Each structure stands twice: as C-alpha cells, then as structure tokens.
Image (cartoon, rainbow, N blue to C red):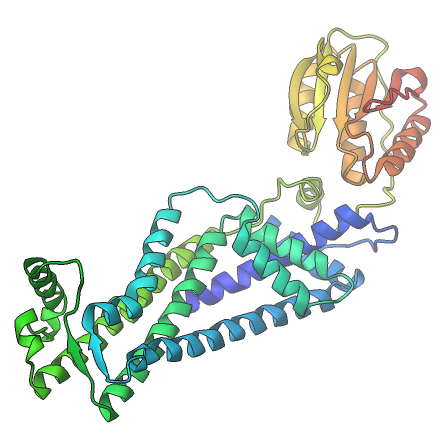
Length: 450
C-alpha cells in the first residue's frame, strides 16, 4: 500500500497546483499577496516550490473549502459505488431462485452469473489500446455526480482541475480501471457468498438444456467447462450423467459453480486490479508537475533565480537599478514567443526569422550571445494575454532592449482575460525606459499601435 499512498500524495499535490492555476486563469485576482519561498538549506525542486506556492494561495483564494468538499464528494461516490455492488451482487446470486421448481439450466445460470462481467472485461481490454478522448460518458457522469454532491461557490474550479489533472497526466484509464475492477470484485464476491448460502440451506438440481445445440456440441462444451477448474480439484459431470445425477453429483455441480464465480469472476478482477495498481505505483514514481503549462511556465524563471524573491502574478514591480539602452540601429527582423508557443497571424511574422521561445534566463543569455556584437533591427515578441504579466516577464523584455533597435510587443488574443493589465504594464515599461517610437504595442485584429 505504500506506493499507492505515494501516488495519492503526489496526485493531491498536482491537483492543488492545478486548482490554483485554473482559478487564476479564470478570475484574474486583483489582490494577490506576494509569495516568498521559504529559505531552505537544500534547494527545493520546481515541483515542491510550485506546491508550496499553491498551498499558500489556496487559503488566500478561499479554495480550501471547495477542495475538501470535492474530496468528501469523491469518497461519498466511492461509498455509493460499493453499496451498489453489494446490492447488485445479492440480486445476481438470486438468479438461482428464479425457478420455483429449483431445477436450473447450468449453461443459463453460468451465463447469468459471469456473462456480463466477462463481456465488459474484454471490452475493457480492447479500450486499453484506444486513445482516450476528452470528456466521454463516464467522465461526464462522474462530473455531474460531483456537482450534485458539491455545491460550494467555487466547486467548478475543483472539478475542472480534477478532470484536467487526470487527463493531462494520462491517469484516467488507470484510476477508472482500478475502481471498475474493485466494483466487480465486490459484486462477484458477494454473489459467490450468497450463492454459497443458498446452496447450503436449499436444494437445487442442475441440467443441461438447449434448443439449438446438438448433443456432441453440448458434450464438448461440458468437457471444456469441466477442465476449467480441474487444477483446483473441481470437476463437472458429463451431460448424460447430469441428467440422472445423484444428490452428491448435484452438490459437486454447486461447488463447481461457486468456484467458477470466485476464480473467473472475483479472482480475475482481483489480479487485474493488482496489476493496474502496480502500473499506477510505477507511474507515481516519476509523477511531477508539468511546469510548461500556461499559467505555470512564467513562474519557473522566478523560482530558479531566487529562493527568497517575492513571486506574484499581478502588480509587477520593475527593477530601477537596471536601465537598459537600445542600440540606434541593427540588422534583420526576428520573432520571439514569450513563455510558450501561441498561434499568430501568418502575415504578422512573414518577414521575421524565428528565434523560438523566451521563457528563462538561459534563453535570454543565448540571445545576448547571439546579438551582442550585431543587434537586430527589430524584434517581434508575441505575448499570451490570457496570462497575467509578472516581474519575470518584464525582466526578460528588459533584457531584449540592448539587443534590438526596435521592440514590437504583440498580444495574440483579441479578447484576452488580462489584456488591460498587459497594455498598462507595457505602456509603463515604455515610459520607464523612455523608448518612445522604438517600442510598439499591438493586439490581435485590432492593430492598435502605440
């Protein structure tokens, strides 16, 4: 259980980080308290620092209640799932009571007990090789159930972040598979237990009955089924012997039927659940936050540069001690993408050479080495205005000033959630460095040059 506990802990950390990311992208919080990482003797990983920041902001954004209610709702759904398994398992075992005479067709009883289980099991095996799609019936059903159980004001962010964490880290199949196999394990175990009680206190007779199959086929089927549990010492009488079977032979068939449910029902589900849990445990060893996602990538440079620097998304503070000067002229036109790639109009970058992504100080150092001796005539920087500006963004832009005679900042979304914040920050950046006409600012489809 230790590896699974490790997975549970890591998954909760990823969920908490994703919850803060979802909330910040949708709400654009105006008053975010500065966050300073704790000083550590040993440097923390990016995962640990992002989780520490998430814990700090969960309380400030009042998201803890939503998260805890969602966790309670998940536990309630699991409880209801296994309660349903108990009820259905009891009902499944009662299939032997459907006949008042208590003379049962063995093929029909076996199919009723194991048919649906085996059919769904083989469907599950086939689904392992099919690429999962977003959403889906099961995912939608689970989300609807969670929404009914969790009606807190910010519940949607907890549900969105839960779904994204499962899908982004490719955990949906593994987690759903474990609960599916456990459901069938409980259901079939209860069915086998009730079946055993019925056979213990009531008398039943079994026969081979069919309308379309001939005797040789029935005989072959009986031999095949009889060999299925021979390794456990459980055998099945032949078709002819069962028609005139004694009480002991009928009891032998009852024991064989219970064995079939336990071995090819409960046992199959138990072994499969353990295998899937093992895969999940192995996967959890390498499970760490994907810090390249929008909303997280801009934090990484700040976390790497300083363990004591205040990290926030709003109200960026410029560093007045660093005054960079633009060159008077340069050669060539170049295009950079700030933090991560975003689709832009083709005509915007038609005459520009691509320099890639500018996200870290190492990226800036690479550009500095490239343009130190021969600056560019202009640099186009495309910016995702669905994300908020921060100190790291401004520091990277400031580092570009000595490398280009003209800086052109373009917001890639026409109606980005943080457009006003970016325009305000970029205009302030222009004024601070007295750039004037050597810096231009525009937005997708608006062409509002400044």
